[in-house]
Amino acid sequence: QVQLVESGGGLVQAGGSLRLSCTASGRRLGVVAMGWYRQAPGKERELAALIRPGGSTIYADSVKDRFSVSREHDWRKVHLQMNNLKPEDTGVYFCKMVIHAGAEYWGQGTQVTVSS
Image 1 (cartoon, rainbow, N blue to C red):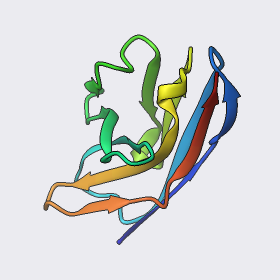
Image 2: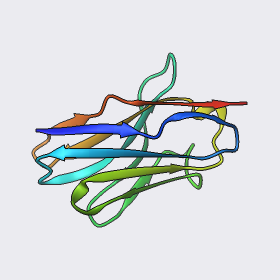
Image 3: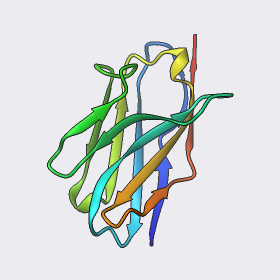
Image 4: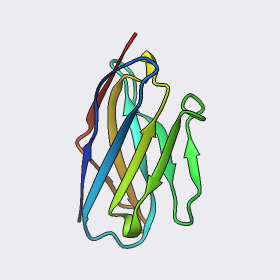
């Protein structure tokens, strides 16, 4: 079982930056991906950024060149550096971990609000 806790959300003006962190505890064997999804009010949850073993990354087109995902040793933490934030980046950001056996774990989410 894995537990994920997000931190770092908040209110920021457009053009500003935030750094989200996700701390993982529990059995972290066989991780195939870990990253961030977001859900804006009234919209479906969508991928923001993902990192895989070996360091390959996937970004949504809307965040490329502005967001950067990174991880620490043993998948204990994953970070999302968000620069040049826009009002459309507002939403709840969820951390997700995918295990080799197909299990998925989610955090509770952290609110990011970008004012214009």
